[in-house]
Image 1 (tube, rainbow, N blue to C red):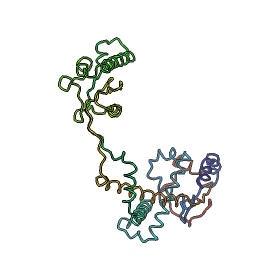
Image 2: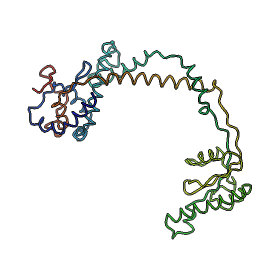
Image 3: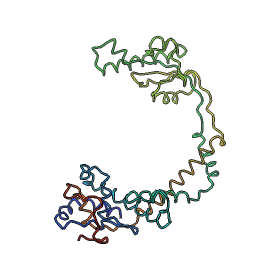
Image 4: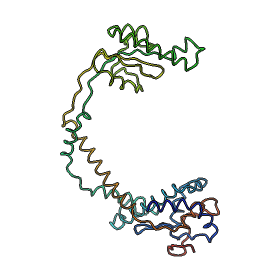
Length: 329
């Protein structure tokens, strides 16, 4: 169905000039239908009133956008039809509303009713299975403390303003690499290397020590560096940092802690339940969307030029002279 519909829309670029030369379609001409509902030109015109007049032609000059519009409108109509059959149109939210707003409210009520009626199984056994099979996902990393040497590209540029950006970055990386080399040779002298190499303005107070309370904001490489160091005394590679380069030493590492099932049970069950409901809802909508579409080729083709100018853009609420028909009048 979808392939045929796409081909029809792509071919509309060829058919449209032919369609435009024929007698204009009447507002109640059916463009597409599916699942016991149909869309007329009047329906589409009413919807297009939401789009600024100067944007309509550009929006409809695209097979993909036309397809998305028609498929979404059909789905809304089908859900609204089911809602009426289930007497959901008595809801106060619907009373006094007219299409297309009425159809949208009804379709939302139908989906809400579908979700409400889903019989959700007991997910606790599956939650336990998930927990036992993937305990690494529920492990809290022990606290880490590191020391950092930060080499600032800005400081190098300030001291040598004639250097271009590439040379500044090269020198900053080389300085950080030199600091790392000395740290690997004498890890116990890292604090002295902080004093010697680091451009961190707070180094006199912090001595380069980073814990959760004073870790730099927005430094995505810190987590990567922490992961790379396994035991106290380990020295990281040189990592990029906002405004320069950095080298870390792992000072201390508390053991990782696996959370007990009781601590994660509620969130795990809620996630499994949410995923189940989302899948059921998606399958319900997909079943409606996969049904066969009946399309009027010339009518679909004409949508690409229908809103090109005021003369070809039908206004909203065009009076209907006759019941829906599947051809041009």
